[in-house]
Image: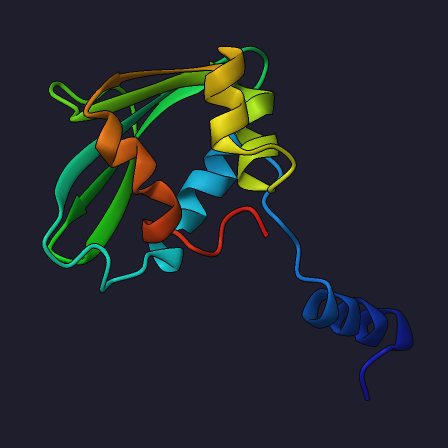
Length: 128
């Protein structure tokens, strides 16, 4: 028999799934959220430069409907998004929109801005 506290924890996890708490956890979860149809003909590298306490350097490689997240700085990204690590969490949790962040200067986008605009269609589960 399953102990009652463990059963309650399992129930709560199923009903209220745990969201990633750090930018790294969020970015690690993105490959499983990829809309393969939207990424079918895409070959792109998204670089994330995150500042602050939750900062770090990560990049997403999207090619032929697949996605892989790696730590570090890519030598030749197609688009680079720079923001505070806490803002990254707010963005991915849906607490603030990417457009609002761009308009307020809280995110800087270098490179192919159209790729940055595709992120929502590539990862429709973010921000919910």
